[in-house]
Amino acid sequence: MHSYSTYSDLLNHLDQLQVEYQDLGIAPNGDPIVAARTGGDETPTIVITAGSHATEHAGVRAAVECVDRLETDHAVYVVPSRDPIGLNGYASALETALDASVSIESFAAVDEILEDRGEIVYDDDELILALIGDTGFATTRPTEELPSCLRLLTRLKEFQHERPSVLELFRGRRIITPAGHAAVEETGEFGRAYTLVVSPDGELLHLNRFFDRDWAPVETRSVRSLLERVEPGLVIDLHENSEQGKRYHVSLRPTRSGVDFDEEERIGARIVDAVRDIGVPLTTDEDIFGDKLDVVGRTADEDRSRDSSDRFYSRSGTGAYCVDPNVTSPPRSGEGLNAVDLAAEKYGFAFTTETGMHGPFEQRVEAAVVSVKAAIDAFEEPH
Ligand SMILES: [Zn+2]
Image (cartoon, rainbow, N blue to C red; front, side, top):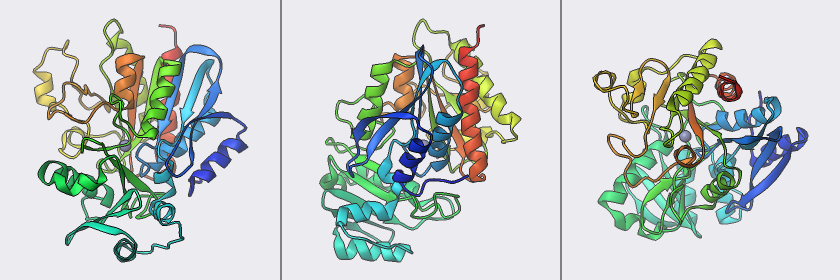
């Protein structure tokens, strides 16, 4: 199965599939952020999105596969890439900023480009932070534990709290980081970039945030306006995770008042069953409750000791976990809502799938596609 080396490859594939797609907005490099239309005309509509973290490429590939393979009478909108700049990779982002071609074969080459052509804002033994035009670029070597993008996310988060002056120059701007995922198929060290955004208030977030903020980057505004317009009854956002080996999990959100949480659980369970049925291993509780993941919650023991009517809990050992953005421990404070948080709060059922990035690319894609198909089947079923 081919991946997309460039965002144009993805758009060409949509053209080959002869699907209709509409522009939701224009990314800062000029690429349109698109929603492909598939399925029938029935409502409530279904929205599938992917690629807000462009390093997680299997979700992007799976989203286009969904355009081709879904069979449903419900109207479906698919936003396959929520970060075209990140999909095109780190070199491409540098080329746009410099208006010149660059070739990067090593981290040393990146250092050299930033030092020669950028305004260096911060430089220590580990990381370089530079501004080229109005775009920030950061780089650091990956370690055995963490890829470059997650190391930079962690370090820059520390800066936000401990040395905010470093981020001062980046307010209202973005900071592009290399993936630095050498062992991950179809992502690699520089093949994709990860986009961080510093808000005018100085908070450092990524492209799956800002859904509850008036000030939001265009990539977020595009998806938010689609959700507003089509009011989906089901939203699935496809992600990947490098902290859980080849294993898979899906997360649920608390439903709005008056909406049956049991129904969301039923759909979640069907997603997990379908993924398990194709032979993909599920996450362990250790994967989920480790401190590096965005999915935060109680330990399985704490969970067992609580009243089952409490809606923030894990479904330990099942591969499906409930995440409440407002009642997390530690809190996701100051982070704002992501796409599915907003969808669950305002529109309908919402799920985030996370495939393990260390699995084979094709299996990661298939797990994501199977998740979407199972969710739609369960959503449509009379019960
Ligand atoms: Zn992600």
